[in-house]
Image (cartoon, rainbow, N blue to C red):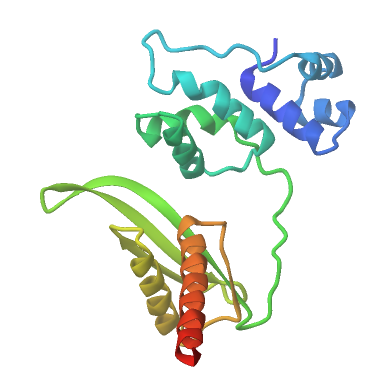
Length: 213
């Protein structure tokens, strides 16, 4: 019987267009085992700890997400299941999802950009930590230049829009300039910044209209 980890690998590779023979050879299992895995209605049962875990109600969801998107980072999954009612920590999530993650089988091909053209911004929750006697959420802001891979990173205690924009200003000062474009992973702060800019434009246009009238 195949393991849960093998089932996730089989389904993920099959969705990428791999044939049964190639999957069997890559994972070191029989072609019949691959066929049986692909004809299953879902993942094989995984062993649950004798004591109930806060993660138990979310394990099926995590298996499904990692089957569809094997490279999802743990912090993204953590935020997703928190919205679904999860109240535990991220360590147990990492322990559970580690064997489900796809092993890197092909070298990563770097996408080259010209100097000064592009930067990428990432935003991660680092958990809650005690600072000056108070438990506080910490967040990591990073900006990476596409050409040189130069990195600016800063840890802050808030995700407010004002802080998000100030982090950009400090990153630009650190690099000595700003790129032509910045890539975001549809982050909440980036969306808010865009919305705020549109609202500011609208108010400015309304003000000019009122002055003319």
